[in-house]
Image (cartoon, rainbow, N blue to C red):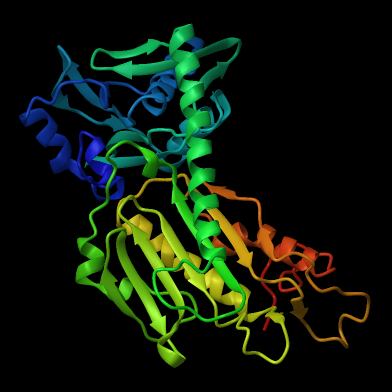
Length: 395
């Protein structure tokens, strides 16, 4: 199941052009649960902005969808693809994006695109993802309501529907934590998909919230056809195989053991485990302070590029866990860090998760708070591979 198939225009937003919009007209695609047409953009009036926010939030609380401006509809079907003549398209988009960000709580995930019709005339598409952290409400100048959608369009949620929506959000949180806890328990017990190095392990989980949607599956063929895209952490060469869970990619080492693997599950979850950097065969137990951060930043960027290519929608929850690290210390220049430092006094470091809401978020910014906590566990104030402003400064 590809995520974009939920949208009436079955294309990534940045690939949509005028021919796709004309096809909506020629096929008489009617308004419904995942698409709605508007001739004009909302004005600055209270009624228009409230209606706009209600439309946007209703998509988020339902199945997601496209709100399209610049199309004249008749009886719910596109009559003409007229477009809107706007002098400064980027400024116009920013204005409405700010209205959405300020007028819906909690914030939703959406994207906007202007498709040129002719000259200065453009169609404006607001693509709203189905939310897994809702329900979302409109909070605009005293208007405080929750909306959803069905085939007839948007409607206000009643008390029972609101209760169900909140329960669904809580259930999803429990499912994510249960999956992560079960996997960490298996890894602690060395119940891995293949023989692995002894010693500490660095574990990175990427868990898309939509992975827990009933019957959700991704198309594995892009990876099966190009396995080079599934690169384990800290690996220069790797092999792969299809397994019951999805696709497993792994990097070998001595004694027929692996030091790194990445499991791509059929529901889009990624589990990446690396054991060479914390290997028990080292003379001293230490965390390579620069190398492991560089490798995780590089790998997270590759993993996010992969999930984006596979059509997996945000948000994605990121977990970083260090296993078997009791007695490890941070490897740093002792001439530079002359104060007290410590060895980790826990075998498992389970770091708080981070929720990523956009593919534009930099991997280093996602991981930095987690890196800080690892340094804290070793007695340091923060990760000194970054400056105070959060810029990467390590050589």
